[in-house]
Image 1 (tube, rainbow, N blue to C red):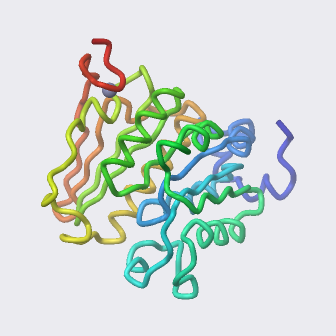
Image 2: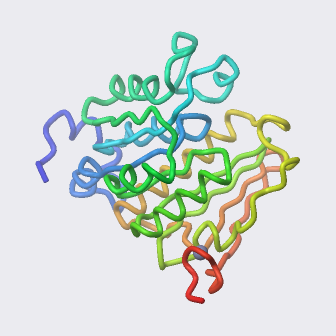
Image 3: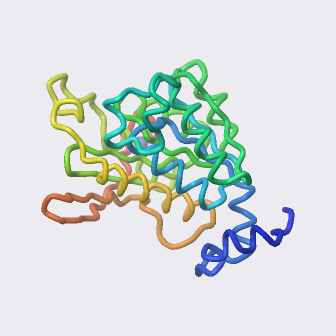
Length: 250
Ligand SMILES: [Zn+2]
């Protein structure tokens, strides 16, 4: 790994000061590869904080274009980006923020046909999607490739995060087996406060850094939940399910 140059020592000083990071940890971050699936409410803060922290390579997967109704929470995009592919818009902001970061743009949906090829180039995946099918796909492929992924979900004033490390704790399918019913509430029906997505996307980044540098205690086997309306947080212990179709042994 190349040594940190003068500018990097200044830019990352407050990372380097952290217990568990140091100069070596920062060098590791600069050599890390993280994929964000979704450049929306969770992907916006996640992408910004990963790039600011000096994650050397960031992939962004999103097939959508920026819409006016996104700007209330998807803070990486602005009115000049309306109609632009979200992956492109996000990449432009990250390149301005930090030229140490190489950004890979995937202006497409993650599908069964491309997921393995895309995910295999990265060390950690951040789930910044908004639907069950995409999470199931990320979970299956990450389990097969033995890649950690950080699940995050938000709705209205609530959010949750769990870190999934293959064979070390439960996977997404151990906990969420069935597709939610069609009439289940979504952010399109009950809303989402942008700041709630900001909290959850930020927790996903701190989990990513912890996994990359083996710092602290990641949310493996523990689901972090927060209700920002009542300001209640919880850590729910969750275990592996032997009959899980993805990681189970039966
Ligand atoms: Zn499982």
